[in-house]
Length: 214
Image (spheres, rainbow, N blue to C red):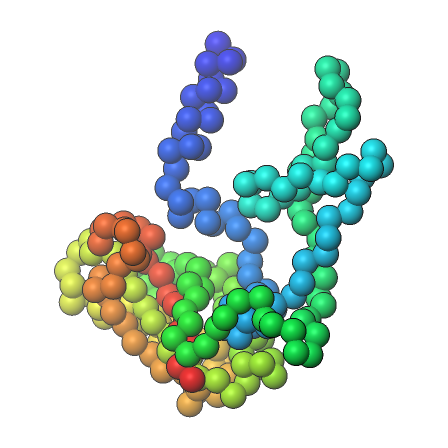
């Protein structure tokens, strides 16, 4: 029965929505936010060779590298290791890794207490990384709109009010961390702007986004 149980477990994970996998992503850093909003991104180091002279093989599993092995049969399976990143920035005159400018938006991936605008402990840590980014030289002179969104479950009026409170809660948190309030606009859209390709009732629509204004 063990092989059957394992198959059922794998099938259950495969059926989980994308939001469940997104929750397993590591928290974004201040560098990540600077990269998203300005295109000033850290360069990734080239993968190092392992003891056999093979370079790690990048898989579709969240960028993890699997070290290749020249052995077969009873050899141990390769272990997943996260890619190493450097903090090296593009040299002067070198093109940024990605274009970015006004209108650039980022899902802050913040969670709240059920039915409220209270940030969870994990969301506070995430929002603090964003606050640090907003005080970096690359973002210090930029303004942002903090947008709250919900799914369509429940009345539109209550969802719009909740999305506004959540966006305001994030803006208040950022201000308490030293971000000037005149750099932050707040807007709650409720269920009116679902993610592309998503049903309005999908849970993934419950989100707070930051949009670069200038």
